[in-house]
Image (cartoon, one colour):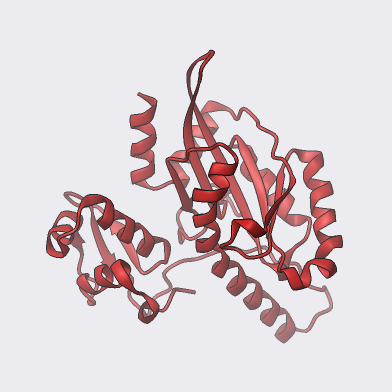
Length: 277
């Protein structure tokens, strides 16, 4: 389910074309110098290509990247899909494929909204908002251990000493996959996060027919302290609505540390380390 490279544009396209097509690795400093970009511009484009599963990072001085060979699967994504027990195999396969395709299309626009308008509205200042669903076979602790999107920030308070790591996880569901199982997936994430949300795509023209399913999700979420957000248009915060507030929890520090180590990128972990000093 990799993005078609021919659909890239701007900096993402320029960087992708600068990386050898034969799979040879190139270091970040060499690519940055070749393109003549500053650090922020380079890593913004690089991280976008990593999230799109078109390139992978590797070990090397300054960090290296290489293209993912087109003939090999770039990412393995586990998506929970509810199907009828007596459905024929062809129908089941079509249902699963539709759910996966629809969900993958939601990640990038929803990540952008979480990092900007949603964060401002909720008085958050995230260090990073990452798509964590697409990590291939990377071991993260089990089928439901991997959120779709993670937002991290370090908070301080005027009258409380110390610095606090806040980790919010988001379980994304497309319109054709809304059911209470999403709550239990988010609940698995909450063991290692301070806030966990279910983020549902509810197109305006389907809102009425999906209302009962959304209400069931909200009721289950309320009992477990999981937040529920609906989005009419994935990339437009004006169409987003909080249906349930996420209850803040204090995860075990060791579990939280393990979550950050397994789920987040090297760049984000470095940002967290520097901010907590």
